[in-house]
Image 1: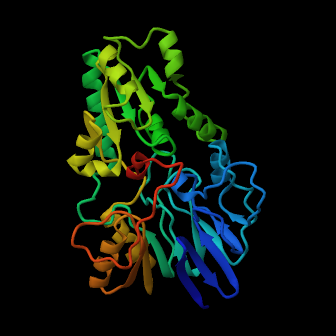
Image 2: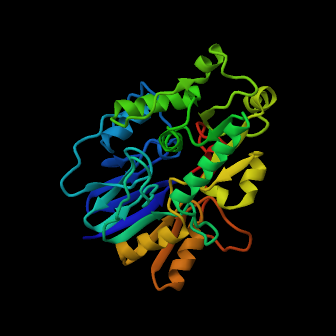
Image 3: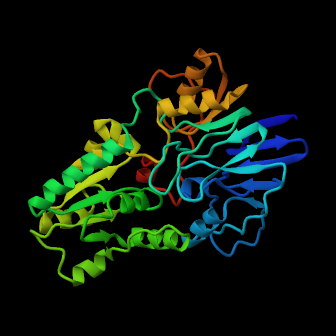
Length: 355
């Protein structure tokens, strides 16, 4: 089977015989099928509702439901043709990879760790592997999930004993739902309105997340005051955000951020967080190597993140590897293969950090 992988005007596509499949395109493009791996903004085309064009969408039903709940125009996915398969990638609820059995596997964003309602996954064998490289450097190795949860519970307990509330921050889709589940045993549990909206969608899709109370409800009940401990699940905000300033002023609230970037101290410093915990919805450097070894591909294409570095590292290990596109790059790293992908109009610089 002849397979061609290429980027045309910023759109990643696979040509299989006379069929073309675009992979997480950021804009409409001519292809036989459009594959959407999951419902994060950086993997959705820049289309809003009431678009007139139609596409043959390959995606999970959960991805379509979540994407449309966020205001995106993602058509109902078609039944996956028998020559293709959609494989769970463990990134967020509904995330899938695109598989042509034995021939090609596109991961989208992937995490092989079991995390609450997201089960650990084993990637399939494939001759061609297109692999995300968000944390594809040796400094990004995450501690065990159990250790991170234990340390956070100890911190919450310490603060509760002192009457201090905590704001637990993560990306509002994906990370925030895991935080809601990890720390559901703490009361009161407050959820930011944007998180509450996504939690409600998850419950509709069968994930029994704790309801909690919204911030506006908590305010009306007089819960937001100094000396009253609580935890709030919130989207990421920097120390300069008015909401964070208010919470620190009125309640002495402690901020805790959860992201893979927390493996280095710079993230906590840049965001002005009190604490940062390295829980990620992506695979770390060692896990990415494990994925490559298990897939046992003849050729690897790296995308996103440290794509150029990771391709170089894989070549030293004997793999045929090529960087297609990425965003993060260190001074001195060659890279005529790597191209910076601009942020979309729906994505902030902060969005690009979190995973």
